[in-house]
Amino acid sequence: MPSYTAPLRDMQFVFDEVLDAYATLQTLPSQREFGHDLGGAILEEAAKLAANVLAPVNGPGDKQGCQYDPATHSVTTPDGFKQAYQQFAQGGWTALACSPDFGGQGLPHVLNMMVEEMVCSANLSLGMYPGLTHGAINALTAHGTPEQQQAYLPKLISGEWTGTMCLTEPQCGTDLGLIRTRAVPQADGSYAISGTKIWITGGEHDLVDNIVHLVLAKLPDAPDSVKGISLFLVPKFLHDGSRNPAFCGGLEHKMGIKGSATCVMNFEGAKGWLIGEANKGLKCMFTMMNSARLMVGLQGLGIAENAYQISLGFAKERLQSRALSGPKAADKPADPIIVHPDVRRMLLRQKVVIEGCRALAYYTGLHQDVAHDHEDPAVREQADDIVQLLTPVVKAFLTDEGSTCANEGLQVLGGAGFTEDWGIEQLVRDCRITRIYEGTNGIQALDLVGRKLGLGGGRAVRHFFAMLETWLKANPEAPHTAAVTKALKQLQAATMWIATEGMKDPEQAGAASVPYLRLFALTTLAWLWSRMAYVAQQKLDAGSSETTFYGAKLKSADFYMARVLTETDGLLAEIKAGKATLMAFSEEEFAV
Image (tube, rainbow, N blue to C red; front, side, top):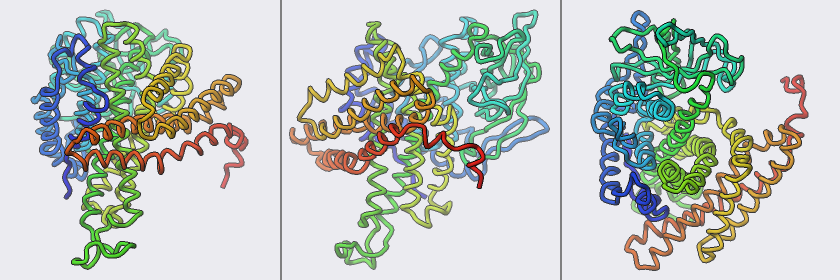
């Protein structure tokens, strides 16, 4: 069975050499002492944990899955998960980027993203438990009372407890205004929470002693819309040790991530406490969801990296036919399949998209740190604009491409990939959910065109375009600036089309949203690939001995521009085609 090895050299290249992240982070008051030695040591230890602790229980966990006991409403995770989680928590990994005020280590958010990528590559199912906990931590940090923070944050941050995000109900997912869960005020200031939530990640399990549910519900007199939603903290066990009536009613039978407990949760008058203001729960929940959406993007990236490693290893060893240009391994009965053009096409597409997506994710994460902690409010605002603008792009594009890369990897293996022996069919199944949860990728596209383009009256996207234009003008000698300039002009033309036509007819913006998000992502990756190639060229010109590594970066940029970025022509045409061919059909005409 192939094993996972964290791509530390490429991670370091993006983080340090391309983004110059250490220098940026050291301008922040909380990160003055964060440098190469500390960052490098943490990443090396995370790589060992991912390879030696998390990855070995991934395949067996998929086969065994979680088990539900209806008599006790309890859930047992696969063999080895509890021990692996405890090692993860005891090593301080759950506390990496959390506030030192509550026991966290206070390290950069972007560093935590890099660790999350490794976790997702090694064992996506197990990584879901601490991943959702981070969302609960963020919501309580931003909106909880001092008493709630003192009572819950230390144990959530330490990993002694885990958290959930309880939104979806049987009759509603994206349209949260339809929720029916009710919260009735009690004399002691608490609320009695009653209702059913579905698809709740980590709603019940045996990894920890207590689970803190963050639950969306409506007060008795609340408006019957999203403006009537409130957020409540509902622990599995109360402070006196008694069991709160928040029970798992069963597990979902899923296509993938089978080691992650996806629960139906029944709240039967469970005691809960309001987080934030009444009827303002959606704002609080979006604090969780925005961080979760970035995390899901990293899940797509992590799966893609693992799939690439498996398919690359297979292609180097599998002997099949001779190269079209003549034998390459004359001493063997056939050549390894990596000599064949189509296999190389699939491998290289994985490689260049993964490395571009990694740069996009880390670039966004670095701005998240600046937005949180820079001393200049104007700089914080600009950084936050970038994070807000790119969050739906990271979530949607990285998961779309993660799924594509996993399928391309399986295709490289051929029939072997379709079996369980190599583990890549699990990656295909596991990755598929990432395009759906935390808001489907279509919803991310609507968020981009419907909310983020208009952020600050268009301030965010104007700043983003100006930033790319400034870089292109300042670095005319960088590789592929002409291709980046062309893509940027296409993106600007698409943005103007949506601004003009979408104002007149919202369905025009909706019809253009998915190709627009993809155009946005491909253009951004083109800019990042130009930057990466420029750094590689400078290193080679300076006499670096890493000629293979940097030479591969230059060739990867060539491949991206010639074989991936060309898609932008079709995307712009699709956007400008408008809604007519989508909306012309009557429902009867969809009949088969």
